[in-house]
Length: 272
Image (cartoon, rainbow, N blue to C red; front, side, top):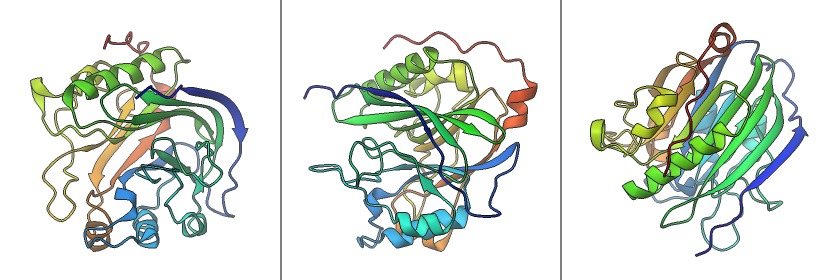
């Protein structure tokens, strides 16, 4: 199957936050959630339930995986009406008017402007993608990478390298990477080791899969410069255990760390 071309667009779209819901200057709440196409462990399709799990976390920025149908016309599956009621606006990423993401990767924000977006078709044996979005927030500029890696280790290595290369071609700014990276092995055999020069040690993370008895750290929230992401935890509630086969992750983003730091330039891209 031929790879789909990447799309890189400079945009200024300003989702309007509801009155009184500004995330403020420096400290924001991040979340990442593989919603399993809104099908819960009870095999019931329920986007409204997924939206309420997201509302439990009260995120300022959330990356959602499997937000669209995977085959055929990739229409969106999220309950955007309920999410809007909770102050979250879908960023315009999909090529389709009724789509929600790129290869299922959607981004929602409480407040901010989308200045630039790059939709990447990731290399590998199965169709996978990533979104690199540069946001203008009240606390400053932020790059958010939303990704869903493949099931094969060699593919995850190539996908991570492609994302590092794409980051290296853009301006230096605080960078968050969130998503289902599908790696359960810590240490030497981990396909995520090539991300460590940028994001630091990835040896351990909170277990998020399977949701009813989580033992594998498949989902990650990573940040550069070091210290900009804090308190990464699985959001483990009765509703979250039911709504998807993954638990979502929740973390704190401290943009004041990035403003105060004088970090080294991001490392050169790693060859695939």
